[in-house]
Length: 314
Image (cartoon, rainbow, N blue to C red; front, side, top):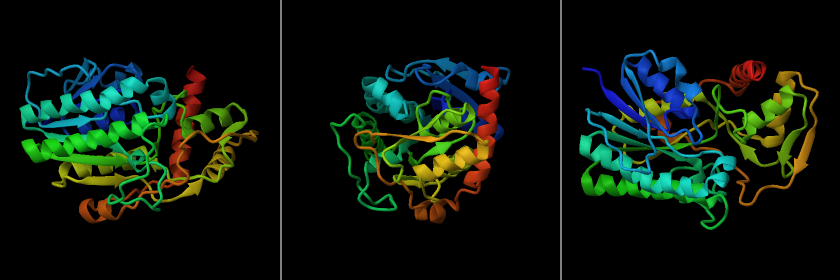
C-alpha cells in the first residue's frame, strides 16, 4: 500500500520540489496551501496525477483530513524577509497555531511529523560555523524576530509533542536554498540578483557586501529532507551547503554567468541581518550519510536558465 504524506505549504518553492520528490518515490501526496506566498502554477504539473491531491486550507485553522496519513511535513510559512515583514502576524500564527494543528494531526494519525525549521533560529550568530548545539543570538523584538521566534517556538512545540505524546518528530534546519520555482519577487538575494542581472539593472547589495552566506541547490536540499524523514533521528539537523562566500562575491558571480552589464549599488544593511551564515554539516554527514553534490556554479546555471525562461514568458 502506498504511503501517504501531507505537505503543508506544498505550493511554495521548497514544498513544490518536496511534493515532486515524494511522488517520484511512490508516495501518495496531499498538498495543502492557502497561496499567501505559494502559487497554483507551482503544482499545475501534478494536477493530472492520481497520487496527488490538493487542499486549499489555512493551517492556522483546524486541519481535518479523513484518510490515513503516514507523514505530516509542515513547510507552510512565509520564508523570505520581504514576505515575513509584509505578513508578520501570519508568520507568527503559522509557526505557532499552524505547527500546533499539524502536530495534532500527526498525533491523531500516528504519523511521522517533520518541521521545516531554519538557520534563522541561530540569528546573527556568534559561533561560526553553526552547529545544532548552538542556541543562537536572536533579537526577539526586532522586525526579523517574527520569523526567527516563530520557528524557535515551532521547534519547542515539536519536541514537547515528542516528549509528551510520543509523536515521531524530525526537525530540518534549512539554510539558504535556491533553484527553479523561486518567485521573481521573492525578495531574497538569488532571485533579486538574477532578475537584476538579466535585465542589466544595478545589483542591490546591502551593507558593503562582506556578509557571508552559503547556498544549497534545491535538489540537494530535498535529498537531505527525504533522508532525514526516513531516519529515526528526532533532534534538529542542519541541511544546507557549507561552501561560504561573501554576498559581493556572489553578486559578481551572477553577473559573470549571465554576461550582464550590471554594476553594483550599495544600500544600508537591514536591522539584525546576519553577518555570517554557514552550516556545520557534521551531524547530517554522520547520521544521514548526506552532503550536497551540486556545485554553486552548476546550480546557478540551472536557476538562471529557468529565470530567463520565466522572464520571457511573463
